[in-house]
Image 1 (cartoon, rainbow, N blue to C red):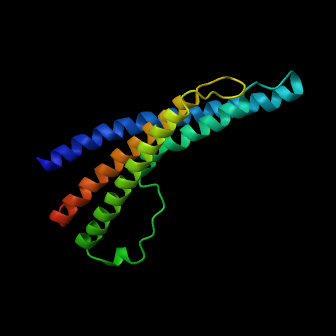
Image 2 (cartoon, one colour):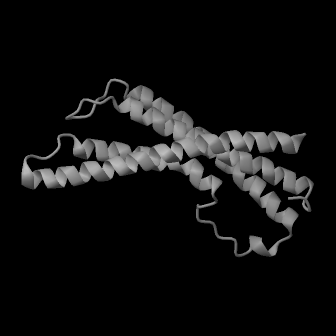
Image 3 (spheres, one colour):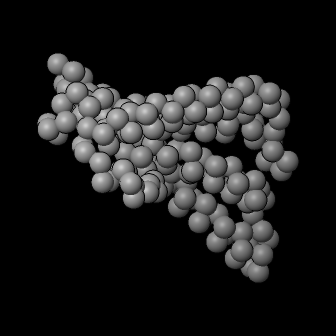
Length: 167
């Protein structure tokens, strides 16, 4: 029953991460087109207004929206010089502790990010007058997706502590 819950929850979180990674990829493509247009426009007609603003806002979205997907694919850097020598159960215990600390810190990050979005709710960008808080809230959603992915890994690690021989 617990394993079925983990599997279903993992599929749901994977779906969210796939959507956010596709949004990140689209933003990266748009950023590339925008930057090319801006540079080419400097020589052919005129530069694109707001390129600098959109580039730094989109870059923040790309980073935060891709964190969960990177965690899901185990793409973050980890060093296991000592932990790899331990038993499967001991490794799982370290994973549980690590994921618990990560969830607490990510929860605090998400809360502070939403708080910051409230603080800058009246702020807009210089040229395009885009609301900064909307972009900050999307970053908070990216942190939430990352937290959910870490929660999936946390649940799997607990399962591995209880049943180290099952995969």
